[in-house]
Image 1: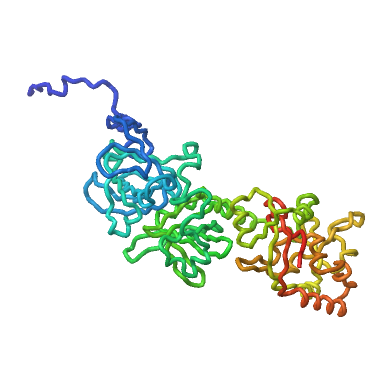
Image 2: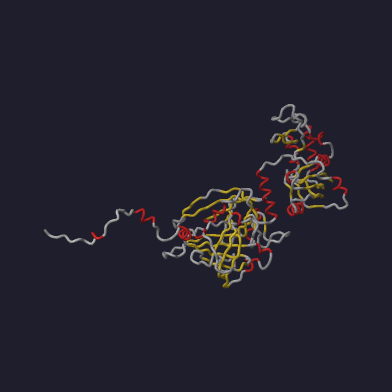
Length: 503
């Protein structure tokens, strides 16, 4: 029988335990969870600079080498994808234009904006218009001003934070952004009108041909994000934002990555200052953002506060005939004063914008273009009031009651409908119907007699009363009158209160 020699395996006795595949996978690859997360999510990792960086305003930046840090608001951005097979190559970059508050302090206006070319590989920078960002860079270069895409900012900073540890891009969220820094538009000086600012209606009618036109609009509605496939079989997103001011309405079209900026915007609350937007005329004007457009979100100017108040006032139903309490304006003091100020409608608008919290009185010399006595009488709307949250109109105020109140409720107090008086104009502007509130004394002085005797009918329509109202219209319309007025923002919903009438 042949002898069996021991094998090498016989010298190694098994330990009785079997290594499982799950145990091998649990050992990891030698990197901690923090190290893996820092590579996969580079924007969320903490950054501790090894050297000091000089903090400067954007207006003080100088091209050249040097470790510099600056802070600004995003006023424009767009993302460009690049195609490279290199494993450590960038997958694209985001061109961001930043501005700060130095626009109202020193230097030339064209030297207070800078663009940041933010390269990325695995990072996902959730950039939005109006965000406060801080940049740490080691080199600042001059931009190619011959390129329309870069002409909006003469300085350029190109950083790649994922590959260069000496550069950093930080977005400030929540408590780090108080909403106060870098909110002043470029070229703005307190107490002076903003250069190039025009109404939306003027911009649509040809103002877009002016160099650096500016419009101040409020967000009216925000549409859903829609996806489209272009000719290159690439998907793109589009968001339609309804905008308006006190003169017109339009739509703002946002394409691509800039569409995520609408997430924090609120209708009738968010105000946008658009500089050099593109426009497409049609049934409804469409505005869009180009490479040279700047968008200031909620700028820190008085006109933005005024427009926001108008927008919020439109969201709630106005009282058809607001009351003016006794003692708010003193007619005798205004008429008997040694200094009597004659305002134009343009002066009135300017005073109301400049000092919205002040109360002032004066005189207005206007022409009454239209009176609606007969038309409102035929519709039984000469007198009006409001009760239980609903407007009530009538031609017989003595016998009209509220349909929702009990018979024992107090008698309603009616007054003449403010829309009896049509447009009021002077050499500088116009007041639309219903934008004035007339006191009882003002109505008597306008019509030259007891209002109740001239206006009230007898239940059904009366031909004689209608003829008297028609003659009253013909006597007053197209005549120039001097109105004694008072204005205060909290009184009568911000309308002009007419205290008296002088021929």
